[in-house]
Each structure stands twice: as structure tokens, then as C-alpha cells.
Length: 424
Image (cartoon, rainbow, N blue to C red):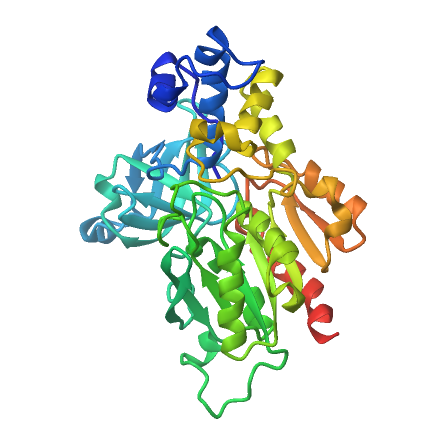
């Protein structure tokens, strides 16, 4: 997920503010200088929320690579990498490392050393999946440690979901595929529960993010459907090329549920990460198949967009009134030209702490208390207000990286919580 992350500069405003905005009135409160100044900042702020990034930024410098032996050096397979120390690079656990413009990939393991003299950290390189890490200058750390189900050790079917915007790729992983090394035969006993898991990734990510849940769903004997959705870099873009923050993408989850029902599912459990959780909540509330949703598992969820946008406004020292104007630009039809949205987003419907009574299925929220990007306070509040919501806190993880910090606890939490709800 990405929100307002850059400093507001005159050059940024020139690139972002529509030319039609110059001199345009946006109501009695915004005229003249306010349009060029406050409205410009508000427009830039609002667009950072709904405009997808062109590509992920490789913002971590690779300082050096190391080898455990001369033979490994000859084969060009480094066993460690030295990076600038930061909250991200020193975090415990296993992480993906994309480099070479995202074309190459390695998996980072444990922290081996910290060097206070130059504030750097050395991490184990568990495997280089592709590319030459020794010649890479910059990289990006990701919570995704697998790019495909096969890398995670599972056999999958490549399928397409026919969305409103076009065909979108998805993976189907059947039960026991990893153990048997093959798909269940036609004579195999169907899933005991006939409950499928629909996996929905977060903003700026891809369906690979959801592969971390496979060990849990496989233990539960569930078929899992890992989807892409409009404007997520794998599926076709929405007509306006903007995120709907869940307000439009839920229709793609509805299509995924229909696919599952057409292929043997009786009902589904929705898994959602960050904005993916917001999408799942909308599918539960507005979908054609909401009566087929048995439960939801939400990781680092954006459960209250009004609170979240206000939080990022404060974080970036945006004056409250300008932040409120940015919210209006997202949610008001007359101001859509500032953001490029085809239709406004009703942020109230995306703010569940204000409507907890509308949660209609058992919901597990997993959220790190150290998440500073989507703070856990709204998740905790929702759990306090809704008897159907259970909150499990993790520690030491940044946004949606609870699994990375403690994969066993993540898996066991999901399996133990979901098991009785599948058998009921």
C-alpha cells in the first residue's frame, strides 16, 4: 500500500494538479489562491491515495555481497548481502529481495551481523532465484518470499477470471498438492468442507503476496484461489486507471467466488491483506454471493479509510482542512477531476469502525502492534465493537509482515481459529 509519501513541492503540484483546476471554483470555500495553494496540496494528497505507482521503487542500496567459500564465489552464488541498516532491513524473519528493475529475485534470511561504524547490516541470502546479485546496485525488500506456488512447493493451475475489465490471471492450488506432487485425480474424494479460500492481496502488491497463507490452507484441506484484480499490475486496469480502495474491486472478488462455486465450492473464506481486506469487507457487505462467505481472515487490514487518510495527513503535517479537502476530492462527484476518478468513493462505507454492526461473518484480524503504515488502532476498535471480530496482535513486524516475522505462529493462529468455523 502507498499513500502520501513524497514532499509536496511546486514541481510535484505542476505534474499532479489538472490544468483545469487553475482558476476553477470548487465551492465557496475554495477560490482564487486557495485553488492554486491549498487545493493543489489537497489534490496531490488525494491522488497519492488513488493513483497506482508506476512501478515499485528499488530504494535499498546493496553495499556488498559475501560468500562462505571460494567455490561459491566462483559460481557467483552469494550467501550474504550487506545493506544499510533500517527498521526494514534489520527486521527478523525471511523476506524477498527484488533487484534489476524487479526482474531478478533472491530470498533473504536471518540477520548475521550489524556494523555500527557505517550503520549497515549483513543478512543471509537463502537462495538467489534469478539474476546476478553480485552486480546489483539497488534492490527492494518485499514480504513476498515466493513468486509462484511452485516456489512455495505447491502445484497450481493457471486460470483466468473474466472480470468486467477483462481477463485476469489467478492460481488455483488444490489440497495436498505439495505432498503428492500432483493435482488430485478425478476419483479423489472432494474437499471435506468444500470451502475454498479466496486470497486478495494489498495495494501495490500482486497475488504472490498471498502465497504465504498456503501452509495454513493446505493444513485445513482447502482449495485456494489466488486472484489478481483490476489495476493491480497483473489484471487489466480500471477504466479510470485508479484504485477504488475496495469500493469497486469487490466486484472482482464476487467473480472469484462465482468461479469457486462453479468448480465445486459450497462456500468460501476470504483472506485479505491491507487494501485487500477492505475489498473483502465490501464483498461481504455488497456482493451477490455474500451468503456464501463463511468467514474472513484479514492481515494488517485497512478497516477505516477515513481514519487512515487522516493519520497519513497528520504524519506528513498536512493541515486538517487541506486533508479534509483531499477526502472531499475522493468522495465528491463534483471534485473528481482533481483525482481522475470516474466515480466517487464513499469512504464512509469503507470505514468499519463507524458501522461495526454491519460485520456479518466471523472475522479474524491479525495485525502487528508495530505497524506504522496502517496502525492497528482501528482494527482493535473494530474488534471491541463487533462480537464477530477477533483480534490477534503480533509484535516486531512492519505492515503485513506478521507472517515473515513468525510464520509458525501466523499459520497456527489461522488454523486454530478457522478449524472450528469450517466444521460448524
